[in-house]
Length: 466
Image (cartoon, rainbow, N blue to C red):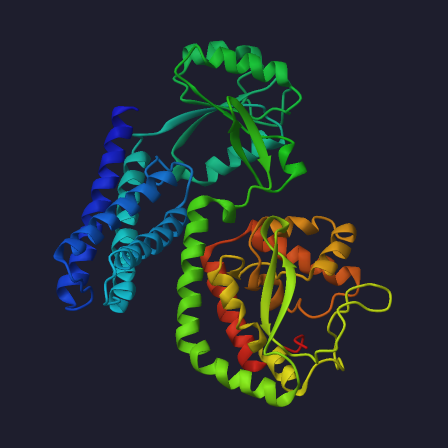
């Protein structure tokens, strides 16, 4: 690690530690009673847990790297995630030591202060570093090998973002492209001459993947110099829109369809939110609403209060889903042709009170128990009945990819009107399309938006709910 990188690293973790200390102190001392523990030692434990979680997650996500090619929104997203993780760490300490005071004010005030202070700190630090770079200091030189479409796109990217602070040296390519004479440094055979005559920090290889022997020769040449080699994938984007580079033993492997939602730290954040949300839903809503709904179901029709059905969860694992019963007990799951008998508009199997339950989505409330058990999430692709899964996976492309993540009580497809029956193949294809978009573009704030929209649809009534 260079002297600059060491200084940069320690500057950032020191600044973060100071800001977190200020936020914790302001929350605790300026708002009396915001965090009350039986033991004073647990206060210090909470403080150091927050610091550790913040620094660990930040370092894990590369926030303390140079971030030369990342914009400020990348850091803001990381700050939001860190606020959630560090706040949940306090909840963990409370549960671990059986504290009898739940610090609701702390859980609101601390993350708000942390977001304000840390985002301001990182914004000012970024401004300072950018000012240094724009003055011609702390820049990195970049040589691009390959002046085709990929190379031109990469050059455009670094040109449009001066805060990346790359000094472009030029292109090397065996085929003379449309680049200017100044940018074109000759054929690839000139590489060693350029490395000898210029201070080249980075070499970006933007050649077709089938030029393996040429790429190998370039890498071997660059290894004789203190130059970092970067490889811009050529055909991988034509295979899959999402991918990541990992290792299998000592071999580098490109993994297609590696979703952000599958990353361990995000799974912990999502799971923590699921538990907290489901717990408060049980305490604040289910505790008084359950007996009312149960009584009306019993008065309205014969049969049990709950409806139980086998569904496919993450990795196609079977689980039993719970709902308030909204149909008569003599209804059949399969039609005369052996296909799954989906609920339809004016379905005679639905009870009078069942229509209200389904229209308002209140029939889904018992699924918070599935959430607490870890079988489903608050937000995710809706789990379909087993017979419907068997039918759909044979007809709809990429259908089972939606089972790589936990299913949810509500989802992106549902708030966009794609709920209800899917007897036509096109309807299921659209639902799967939205489910896969959610998986590929997942963020914590997307989940929050979906929850808010679901509550709004519950309040006004969803016309596709029947």
